[in-house]
Amino acid sequence: MTAMASRSERLSGWGRYPVATCSVADASTVEDVRRTLAVSPQLIGRGLGRSYGDSSLNPDRTLRFTGMDRVLAFDADTGRTVCEAGLSLDALIDLFLPRGWFAPVTPGTKFVTVGGMIASDVHGKNHHRDGSFCDHVEWIELLLPERGLVRCSRDEHRDLFEATCGGMGLTGAIVRACFRLLRVPTASIRQRTARARDLDALLTLAEESLDWTYSVAWVDCLAKGRSLGRSVLFLGEHARVDELPAAHRSDPLARRARRRKSVPLDLPSFVLGPLSVRLFNELYYFRQKAGEAVVDLDPYFYPLDAVGDWNRIYGRRGFVQYQCVLPLENSRQGLISLLEAISGAGQGSFLAVLKRMGGQSSGMLSFPRPGYTLALDFPLAAGTLALLDRLDAITVAHGGRVYLAKDARICAERFAAGYPRLQEFRDTRRRWNLDQRFRSLQSERLGI
Picture 1: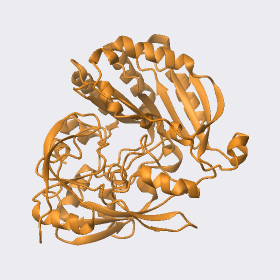
Picture 2: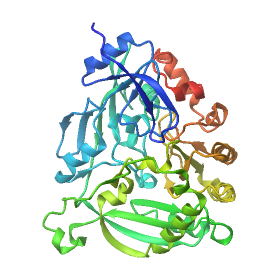
Picture 3: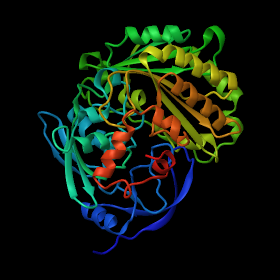
Picture 4: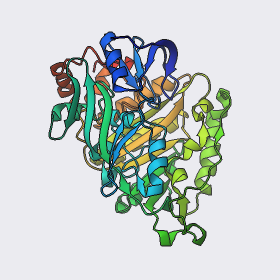
């Protein structure tokens, strides 16, 4: 069997921290994957590199799946779709939205692959109603070094299926998957915007709005005192044709053209200093007007995708995204403690997002659980990692967990405290003889 060509590349996640020199191979077919497995003592898969930290980095061999991007089957009656793991969500939407279909769950960027969405068990603004992406996956095909192609589902090799959903690529090479798309009437969202003066007002609004399909809040994480947690809540529903502006009703599934901007260089650190973030937060909060409007799908779900290479805003040193979820019964007090620690440190984030989560996901290492999840970006600067250590301690003390797809630095002990099925995951990897073959810098750091 001829070995696939590989080359040395400097890689990172979307946060650009950490950076590692990796031996990279690209796969366009299942046979490419098979050949790479045959000559690689260990490896990790990689899609479009949108996990934030070190979960898709392995210096010995990183296998990129973006060449495996074909749709293999589609049922126009049910929305059932079979595709290769390297298909991007962007391409999926371009292909199926004009036909009236959309992803059942979408993260905040469409520049991710289906394999990455499964490995991270991504969630979106509708988790409180529709769960995570893997809740809509019917089966997954993995290529394993010793057993070849293995299909797993809730009915077949369930242990492997539940380990793969949210398993960060550590259970084999995901090559194909089957899931159901969501039928939608238009390419627009009916959005309701509401301002909340503080955290309690936000949580009340969020709980009263659980009948809305989509819900997400921007939080001013530098606000203090009586304004702690002041926010803007954005609710959404797929707009009906009769709710569209008259000019758009003749072609309700058309997406409006967006001019995509880009960040051409790494910005200096002062651009996102505390004063700049505070000013941005003040302006953003007061510019949001309460009420309803019909907006295009892209700016509602993917506002940052309109800016290419937006991660360069944080400068050459990169940034860390911190995302945790707190159980519902502890969410209020945990969020107060987190926001007080952030505002007290003066290291606020202008990208601070709060979402309500619904049921517990079935994946052994899946992130979602009932409660509230808070996600924030922090430029790497003096004191950043120490602040994040304090946030870890608060999260664990309130029974929460940190999201592996966003993590770049949590310690093994605090990670393990949030994942009660971790040992089951380790046992499943050993049972399938995968624990020494699929590894990443993250898995080694955390002892997964």
